[in-house]
Image 1 (tube, helix red, strand yellow):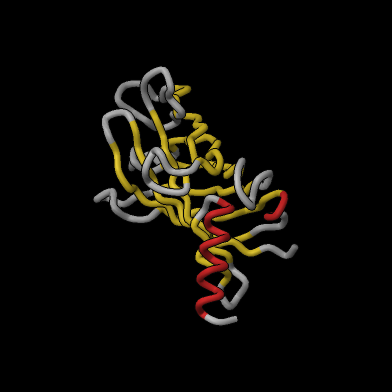
Image 2: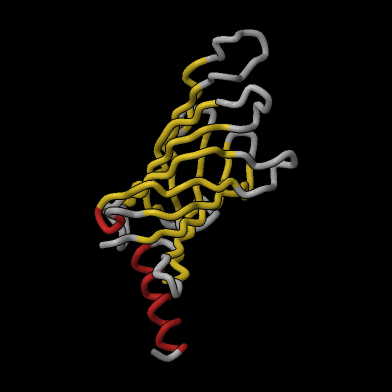
Length: 176
């Protein structure tokens, strides 16, 4: 396959799936880039706080939140909607209130992966300056991602007083 053919194929795939696919690596790993658009206040909130800390006071340990965020092709709110990021976040670190344990399901509702899911789990820690990428394990999936394994890197992209945009890079292998 020539470089021109590969670029054309990648552009068509990106346009039809609604995701930026960097392609398969030599080891069969597929890279998918998505943007999570989260709204945490107002009538259209996609993330809500469910429980307070059982320790009381100013503690955040044990708090639980749920989310059903938009997954978009780009960082702009007008970019193509490709799915949802659904799951739970628990504050599970007694020493650092900025560290969370999460379970996240990437649900593809449009494009070439429509009807498929990826399941991510693990610790989210953006580091002391808030700029580090949080790495989580890809622990499974359905549809085109049956028997998936791999990892994800999530970083903060932008925020307002009521919204956040997170860049999510998925590196996935399947046996199917």
